[in-house]
Length: 355
Ligand SMILES: *Cc1c(COP(=O)(O)O)cnc(C)c1O
Image (cartoon, rainbow, N blue to C red):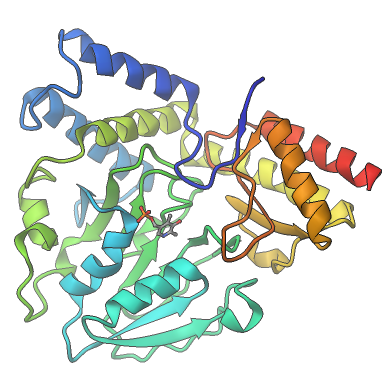
């Protein structure tokens, strides 16, 4: 049976990306060696990095004031690498606390300087984005999570602030046309919407750097990675290659405009189905609902378990909610086809009619 992959991350990738990646494991670009066997400083691999960087620039429509890096340690490492590079011990950074990932980021920043929580939606179990934030003018930067993967909320437009804006875009990177230039630093673990686990995209304005007193370990200093063109040490060669293939696929399919169109179509279908069936309840504020991760519930726990079992039997993978949230979570990243959402909605309707 065809599996419908609603995993929250690592998650569904385009079929052709998987095929090209498997070919490259056996014979990369016909050179008679595997992508896993070539040196990271070989021109073969330098070409991979260069093309991936230039596709990132093209898709984001950003200029030379930005640097594009491929780093390791996942988005979680950025929770500490950002403040380590940008925030002195005597300074304050502001964080929007709209979910578990944002609050983890704030917790790490507090190891390096003062943290001001500019807004929080914890009062309503993170079921909305609190846009009523206050950011002291002296804040070194404001950090937001553009899509809250766990809770199912997403910023639909971005705040205008006088200090640098930093975005954790791990779960909605390249899913929509946005003005990336509003951000001074963007980071994203690749495994949700742009490739395989093991690499982290970091896009930052060079002029953010060199403004603190702290000594930074060599491998954690953005400046060193910029100077070394993401080749400071051995990078995650294969994960970067899968990102390149995914970036090519996004461009070839019609770029971010097309990704956004598809994503709106999938999300509209799912949310309208949820809203039309009283057995399902989505507690997320309508204006803040995520087009990437839909989180909803069946009130009766036994029925919910029954529904989740039914999903499994029907090849619908990864729809159990995050451990701290519970319920149902359907992730609809770029590579998820509309037909999978249709199949899921059919199952929901069928279940609702029987219960
Ligand atoms: C998944 C996720 C993370 C953590 O990513 P890792 O690569 O596992 O460290 C951080 N932020 C957001 C928004 C996420 O969705």
